Image (cartoon, rainbow, N blue to C red; front, side, top):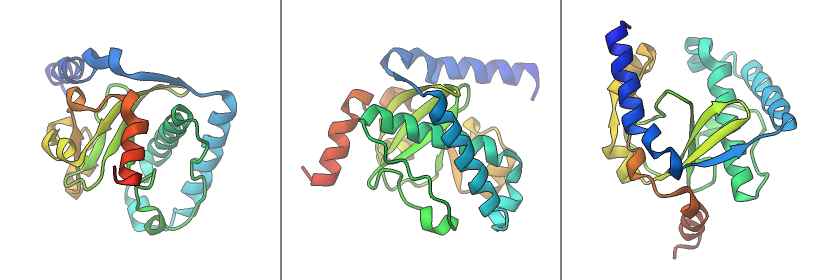
Amino acid sequence: MGPLVMQALEYNYRFYVEQYMDTFIKVKLNHDDLLRADKFVKEKITAKATESHHIVDGSQEYKRSYTGVLGEMAVNKFLGSDSVDLTVGPSSNYSVPDLGSCGIKSVEWGKYPLILKVSRYPEIIVLKHNDDTLYICGIATPLILNTFQSLDCVLSPNVIRRGEKTGFYGFDKLISPIKIKYVLESSITGR
């Protein structure tokens, strides 16, 4: 990417994401959390080394998985829970929302979260500032996810080529992180 494209992406990130930072909830993880995440990701990568998707996309596997599990840990810490699933098995066994009725999408600071082009359940959006500092941005309903998406937010040509995912930019449409507990309880109880 040339300097003009990078400047445009940085401007867009400030416009679509950073200006809403005062609504995000900051969560700090401790050293033990980071060690658990590292151990889990290494075991996961070893176990999935034979799956075709992981063979094709292995170059960023550790970084992406590590960011994902840190995001799950941050959300669970915020919710007062320690129910992060650190078991390893075939990917097909884990193709469900992280919290039963709601997923968690985590991404490094400066990037947009990758989502399915057609989302069927809500996602909690988390930004990883660094390994021990994450920001819970809020929760996006399927309507929000399906409306505020663009391939212009995707950096990886491989992701674009596969055609399943896109980038989410609707941070101004997120339900406040403060309401996450209520939204999750309502979706479970049906109220």
